[in-house]
Amino acid sequence: MSGAESAGAEAQAQNQANGNRTRSRSHLDNTMAIRLMPMLVRLQLCAHLDALDVWQQLATAVNLYPDQVEQISSQKQRGRSASNEFLKIWGDQYNHTVQTLFALFKKLKLHNAMRLIKDYVSEDLHKYIPRSVPISDLRAPPDSSAKVNNGPPFPSSSGVSNSNNNRTSTTTTEEIPSLESLGNIHISTHWRKNPMELLDKHLATPIGVELDMCLCAIEVGLQCTAVDPQNRLSMDAVLKRFRPFQQFLITNDS
Image 1 (cartoon, one colour):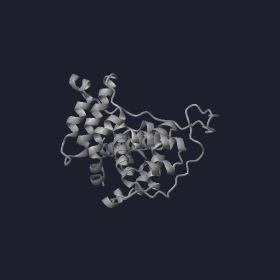
Image 2 (spheres, rainbow, N blue to C red; image 1 turned 30 degrees about the horizontal axis):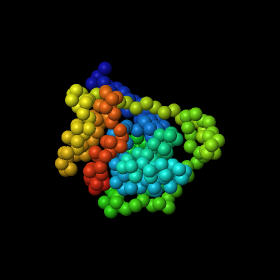
Image 3 (tube, rainbow, N blue to C red; image 1 turned 90 degrees about the horizontal axis):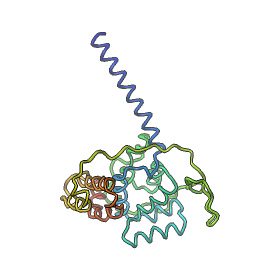
Image 4 (cartoon, rainbow, N blue to C red; image 1 turned 60 degrees about the vertical axis):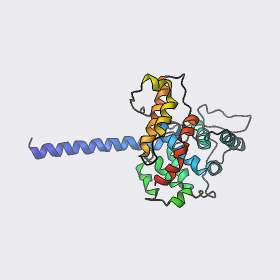
């Protein structure tokens, strides 16, 4: 085989491989449940939404029940993340997908939130994200008049209706893919026993550095939890350490 033929064959093989990856990614993008979103992305998203304080708009847009809204409000009053509580109820409990969440953000014009999860939706949807957003728009409250049709009552894993509150649940047939692990991070014994100390050490880094350098501490902390369950690292505890960077998220991630 000549050099030209060899190069052509390699190019064809590469194109086929790229096509396979695209088809595979398309499947993931259309079916990934919010509960399967990488924890690091969820943390960053919750920090951003908490900084904007838009949980009420989100809850209204998807027509959450009054007791669910009260549950979110109660968690916020306790100093916990209202956005994470919203995702627990609407995303985790009812098994909505990241693509549906992306559509919700579009309805409410939360463009920066769309950017934070764009890697987990179909690339065809990226065209709905503005190329740039003025800081004033990021700080402005979203359009509370925009509504998302939540459809029939939310699906649950059991598919059994609850006669106590008349909230009928249906099963979902879409296949939920598994996520790859966050990566193999080597953690010393000291950090395994003191994950919060590690977070504080890294989050003390000056604001001017890349945000990813700050987020890596959260990823390591989450790995600590997996290594040593006795040192549980809750979402709310991490977000509490992360709050000083909320304004940085708003003003620099445009």
